[in-house]
Amino acid sequence: MTGLQKMFSPKDMTQGKPWQRMIEFAVPMLIGNFAQQLYNTADSIIVGKYVGDNALAAVGSASPIINMMLALFIGIATGAGIMVSQNFGAKNREGLSKTIGNCMTLTAIAVVIAMVFGLPIINPILRLLDTPESIIGWAATYLKILTLGTVGFFYYNILAGILRGMGDSLSALVFLLIAAGLNVVLDLWFVAGFKLGVAGVALATIIAQAISGFLCLLKLRKMSATFDMNADTLKPRKEYIGRIIRLGLPSGVTQAIMAVAIMLVQSLTNSFGEMVIACNVIVMRVDGFAMMPNMTFGMTLTTYTGQNIGARRLDRVKEGTKQGTLMALAFSTVITIMLLLFGKGLMRIFTTTDELVDLAYRMMSILAVGYVIMGFMMCISGVMRGCGNTMTPMWISLISSVAIRVPLAYVFAAMTKCAEWPNGKPQSTYLSGVISWVLGAVLTYIAFRFGKWRKTMYVEREPVADTEQPVVTE
Image 1: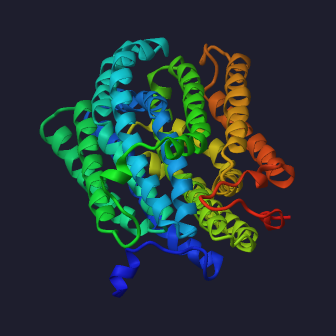
Image 2: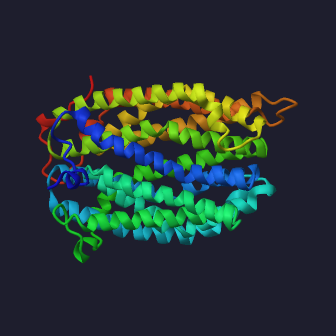
Image 3: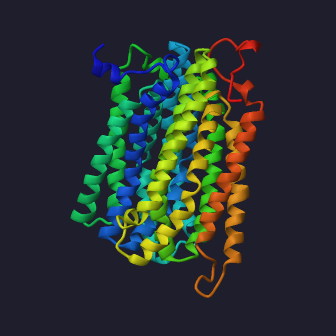
C-alpha cells in the first residue's frame, strides 16, 4: 500500500498513542466540519450581500424547521456510526457489511419519509412560529427546495459517517471540500448571476450535497477488502435495523425535541422583529464555526471508544477520554479568545449595517463564555455513545435544552420588557442558552462519574466478561 493509499484507508484506533490516533482522525474531520459549515454560511453571506437583510433573516428562520425534519435521519446516522466503529474494531466483516448495507436501505426510507411528510407542513409551521410576512415567502421557498433535495444531504452524511466509523475521516473531508467549493461557485452563479435569490442558494446547496454523497458512494464501493457491498448486504434485516434504531433512536428523539425547543425560541426571536432575526442568523453561523472543535472531538471520542470497545482495549478508553477532552478544551479556549478579539470583523462579512453588526457582536459575546463548557460536555457524551449508551446523553440534552432553556428564555424576555423592546430584550435567548449549557455540563459529569452507563455497551461479539468493565476517568 502506497503512502497516499494509506492516508485514504480505514484507520485502526486501537493501536498507538491515543492522542496521536485522535489527532490523525480529528484534524481532517475538523477541516471537514469547517467546510460543512460553509454551506449555510456561504448561503447567508451571499444572500445578505446580494439580496438584503430580510433575505438573510428568511434563510435563518428556516434552519430550525429543516433541523426538525431531519431528526429521524440523524438518529439513523448515530446508530450507524456506533455499530460501524465497533464492528470494525472487532474485525467482524460480516457484521460490518450488513450494518453498512442496512444503513443505506434505511436512508432511502428516510428520504421518502422526509419528502412525503415534510413538504405539506412547511407553510403551517412558518405561520405557527409567527414568521413575519415580509420574509415568510422566501423562507417557504428555501425550505421546500431543501426538502426536495434531502437525498444528497442524507446520503452524504450517512456515507461519510460510515467512512469515519472505520477511521477514514480524510476521504470524507476531500469530498466535502469539493462540494463546499462548488456550493460557493453555484451560490454566486445563481444569486449574483441569474438573480434567483433565496431559491438560488437552496438549489446550490442541494446540488453540491448530491455530488458529495455520490463521491462517498464511489469510495465505499472500492473498499472491498474491508467489507462487502451487494444485494444481500442491502437486504433489510430485522436484527440490524433494530440495533441501528435502538442505538440511534435516542439521538433522533433528542434532535427532534431539541429542534422543537429551538423553534419555540425562534418564535420568541421572531417577535423581536426582522433586525433581531437577521442578528440571530449571523450569530448562529459564527456559532457553528465556534462549536466545531467541540463537535469534532465529541465525534472523534465516539469512534475511538467504539473501536476500542469492539477490540476489548478497555484500558485505552480511560486514557483516550482524558487526552481527547483536554485537546477539545484547548481548541475551544483559543477560539473563544479569537471571537472576543475579532468578532466584529466576522459580523461585517455578513452585513454592512452597523446597527446589525453591533447587535450581533453583543449577542455573540454572551454565547462565547459557554464554549469551553460545551467542549467538556460533548467529549464526555461522545465516550458514553461510543460504549453504546445513547440514552443518558439524550436525557441530559432534553433536560438542558427543553426543560431549562425554553422556560428561561421566556422568563428573561418577560422580565426585560421596556419601551425599546416591548417583547423583551434579545439577550434573553442567549443568556438562557449559556445557563442551559452550564447545567447540562454538570449533569453530564454526574452521569459520567456515577452512572451505570458503563454496563450498556453493545458490540457484535460475545458479551463482555464481568471482569472487563470499561475503565473511565476517575
